[in-house]
Image (cartoon, rainbow, N blue to C red):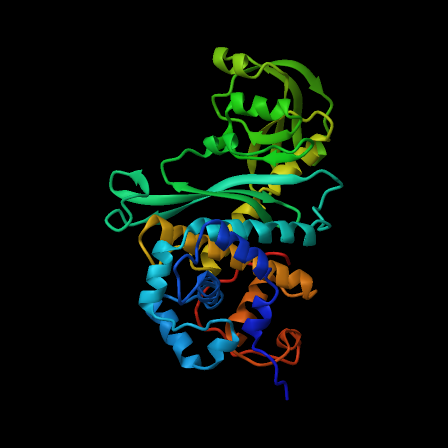
Length: 388
């Protein structure tokens, strides 16, 4: 009989707690705090994400049932709604944001050798945002429209392993293109964006930093063709051109030549026009790179379906950001568990197994063995797979 620790404790032991404590010290998170410190707060919020708890009362009830086991799980204080609510309102959200960045750096190393599906050595990023709608009366600080509040998660994702390397949380009114001003571009990397990021002044800055971009052209896009390159129509590429901008302000902001590729997507029966500053890759690879941008869409769908980020335990800006960053950390933790334990299951399967076996006392690898079949989850959430 296994007399060791619970699976929750084994999962938490994979986290670099000394570095977490440095984040706490940086922002004085435990200053004058006698009970329910930041480390315990993080553990409880991670538990809420792993098991998809609905409310503070739900978290309190589930954890109090465990009684004495909580001490051995690293939760030494009484878990109550008041403690959780106060911590969400007052613990600086930057503690959890900085810790999430530490986990991002760790996941990047673990997934550095993931296959991209293309014969390309360069780093490929997808840049996009997702909007989370909120109630205006409860979240007046999250400006969006006259009768609606919302926040945006602006995300830069490394497509080798679908690891988010940069996340910036803003209110819903901030335009996506402004995020380009906050990014530090990597020379030689590819940045794949949709038409919302088509700002030629910002793209020219990216070009000058020797990074590459791939974006969709807008319908009113005006240009002058300089060269037409030979294409293979069997690949779906209809034209491959070297162009210059002709609109006065656009031409003034982006003075270098651009590459325009028109591609017909047979699966979607749709004609797409791409703009890029890369003239070396074959046109069909440019189209394939843009298609890989949908990994970030799958990431947004995954975290919205399987983590708690569409409804919140608190209404203040700090409480919302604490919950989002602990959700991101939970996603990264599941990704780290997959690699460090060399699991073959998808992230969805790993999350479901963990959610149903956190309080079991068994070696964590045994929970993922074929001989262990957890009780079926009846939450009714649809499955979205990632890392298949």
